Length: 613
Image 1 (tube, rainbow, N blue to C red):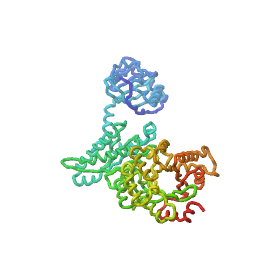
Image 2: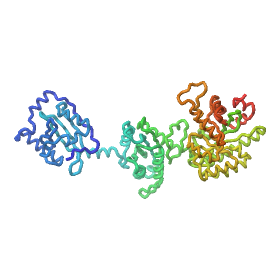
Image 3: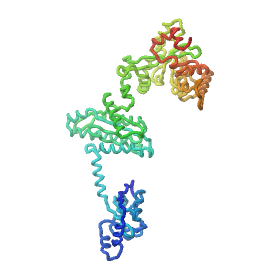
Image 4: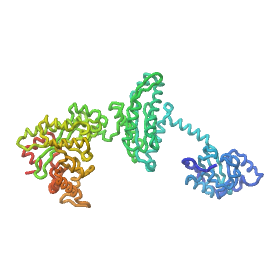
């Protein structure tokens, strides 16, 4: 019999009674089983159905009965002289080993613990080990509790699994969830994150009411099978597949331990929705069902099982409210904004047709003379229910689903039309140029060159009065069609600007090859300036040195430089001294309506706005 324990060893069940003097004297008067061949105790010891061995103070087996030999798969005589603790793996954990040593020394009354040991023929045996003191050693008793453990396992399985779907039930789910968010679980390694898809079938009550609960139960079982397949497919490359559980009624959950981010949970939710879209053939009936899913993914640290379920339940409610048959990602800001990513995406394209978008314009001011030279067009979504939304709430969605193409075309046409109107309304002033942001998908998914040419011809705006802004990462990675489009636009006379320069790839070699005319420095550089009159700390002037170097480089390449996020006169003064050409920020004006720009074009007002006498 091997003394090797299989798997985690349960903690010992210790009976911590102190051995009193009277107990010790009584035990000394008791004849031990090994004393005397004719002893009745010896006979009882040998014939006992309980496996036993007498162990001396050194922990060695003095004698063992045949029952113990049979249990361990060897002869009783071969156990004599063996280390008793090795036979039943008492050294597997520190607590059991310490308690065993205390019993050997007579300092503790008894030790009881459970072990799973391996029989020589290969099968596992669960045993309960009891160690009790004798006069000159201890009595080791070993009871086979395999049948009891198997019964307990079967009963636990029944207690922890749903009888209809055979999935883990709510009790087992919360047991696993609670264990996953405990500190020890994520501190042992892994990603330290946890994710949950909380699913509810849409219209399941109607199935029960129409076809009866028997058909409803069969439908639940079929749904469980499909969700399990989704979980298996999602977990085939991972150590642990997502846990699928039925929480009650028509509610299911997919728990992902050590998740890798919201994308993984979104993919799992999408695969679940796709799997449930296929009709179910049950008892000669073809039934269709959809589901709404609330998705939550976050760091396990600081998360509780209750908190995660509350977030999932709230998100599931959002999915139902948004029209069902969809998944919704938990958004902490939704309580304030009352809108989810999916709701915005589904209404974005129709909003373009309904004319819900408006443009504000932020002045671009010459640093040398404070004159208003141009404006940047900034789109807002005037949502009829949720109010005015800034670009960071919807531009990303528009880029993902392609709505950026029609939206970008509308922004371009509106901005050019407005710039031409200002030109006509103020013929005596130098015309303003208008700067419009362009997403790289607009270059790929539409004929941007043709769109620009058509809009310029329609509005009558000169190409030199149009500036197109692309992010640094988009421009620096341009090749093939995007590069050709940028070159064609430049040849047309349109100015190309790199937005947020200095925060992306910053591949300076591209600047000499791309048809770029303007660099727009990211506002983080301007915010990092040290101002006159303020205390200087370590690294004083680092941002200013970087900005000055970029301005000089741009000028050597024939480019002009615009500084974003200019908010104070001190910043403007430093930028002017460095040689920056144009400034943009709240020092001059926040984004305003077209009418306000018209007011700024009047000499008196313009001077006041730019801080010039």
